[in-house]
Every structure is written in structure tokens, then in C-alpha cells.
Length: 362
Image (tube, rainbow, N blue to C red):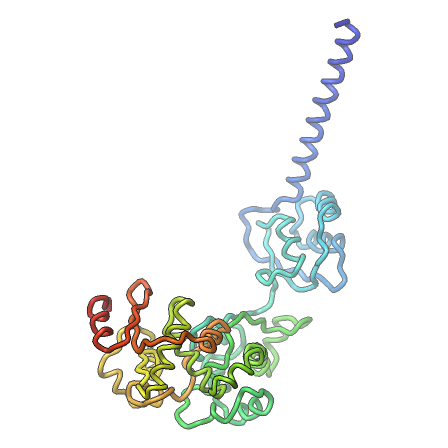
């Protein structure tokens, strides 16, 4: 190779090396520029993204809030990224989040970062448990919320508004009228465009929150109304049975079979003898039920009184509603849950007592 060619090759190699170093430096600068401002700082930072804000405007808002490490890099990032579903809302971020994490949350409106008061009703929770959670999101006590949900004048207005609410919730012996009618889901307190603070100051907050919940109940029951009608049960009876199945089942796969057991008992005039209903009558949460417990005087005591109890005993998800509507047609009359949740089904009392003796863990 000639000296001239060798010199050209060295020049090319130097240029390539310089370009590699330059590109590497640029990439490092870019990645560092869109990284977290302070990885150790998780103190909440609230930002509001107005309706119609584009990605560049959002960068400015985030920069003003101290959430941008390098604005030039941030603007490059939003230009080359596909953020096409940016949602206006008030968000709660922190400085330990990278720009990419923040923009992904805004793109689509991630509920986990929306700065609104929210609460979640979990499957199988009772009305007092729901009231306790709602009290944490509203300027009312648990007792005030329960009292509102027991006010007959208020309940009558709800009965007029919602087709699935009937005078059955006002019957004598009902412990909590709206028990079983509060659909399990996550709910936000504020209306769209209303801040959580404004919602908290709203004198109608309990009513507004209740209507959000009942709207979800309406949706779940409306989708199944025809099948519920075909079952021969009223809505109140259907939710009552579904709530028992929900509370007696640990795994979804057992629900249709357990529903079948209870339906077999009802059709053969056997008492349901559900421990869950006895514990509900006592308003306690535990596993063991004693002879003293089963003697409690209550229309929820299915050891003492035949048929369904006075009303539902917990919140019921759609999956359990479907399990009851499509229950397993079996010959079982008894079931016993082992410590690991596995259920032993029996056709006779002798089989059941044998299984209970063998697997009893409480």
C-alpha cells in the first residue's frame, strides 16, 4: 500500500472514530437529558395539562414544574416519539420519573397518576368497609355515609331512578339497604374537568359518589337482565345468592359449582347453612363459626331460617353473577374448603362430615 493510500485510510479511520465518539456523546447527552431530574426524590409534583395541549406545550409545563432535566433533549424526544393520545387532566408525578415515563402516563391518561381522589370497592367487601374507604376520599365520616345510605327518603329517590332498586331494600330486617348493590370497581370522586378539591367541597359528594357506583351496577345488571329474569329470581334474590357465592368462594373456578350446591339446597328445601351469612349477621370477619353463632337471632342466619337471607352480604363482581347464572348442575349438597382453598364436594352428610374431620384446619 502506498503512503498516500495509507494516509487516506488513517484519515478515514480517524474520521470514523471521531464520528463514533461524537454520536456516542450525543446519545449519552440525549439519554441523560431525558432521565429523571432527581432519582431519589419521590415527593409528589402536581401538574395540570389543559385540553388541546400538544407535546411541545406539555414539555413547557413539565419544565416549569421542575420535571425536565434538559428541555432541548425533551423537545427532541417528543418530536421523535409517537405520543398521539395525549390526555388533558391533572396529574401527580415526581422527580424520580424519567421524561419517557411521564409522557407515557399522559399519553392515554394513566389512572395511576391522575391527581383525583379515588377509592376502590373490592369483590366481597361489605357496605361498612366500602363506607370506610369512601370516608377517606370525602369530607364525611364512615358513620355519616352509612347514615346517608340508610336514609329512607334518599333511598326512595334512588328507587325511583334505578330500575334494579326496589322496595326489597327497605324490608324489615335489612341491615344495610344498599348492601350488594355497590359494584366493585375503582371510582374517581371528581367529575371530568372538576378538581378533587372542588368535589370534596361539594355538599352532594356522597350522592355523587353513590350515583357513580350505581351507574356501574346498572351496567353490570342491565347486561344480564334477560338471564336474571329467566332464572326466576328477582334482582334482590339474585344479588343475595351471588353475594353468598362470592363470599364462600376463594377461586373463580369453584363459583359455578358452589352456586350449584346452594341451588340444590334451595330446590330440596334444605337450609343454606352458610357460615358467611351468620358472620354477616354478627358483623364479624373470621373463619370459625360456633354453635352459639349459629343460634343468633337474625334474618341473615341461614342455619335458623330456610331459604335466602334478608339481603346480600357483600359486593358482587360480574364474574360471580355469571357463575350463578351459569351454575354447574351437579348432585352435591355440601362443600368444605381446605386450608389451601381447595374445595371438597360431597353428596351426603356422612361424606361431608368425613371430609371436614379429615381436613379441618381451624
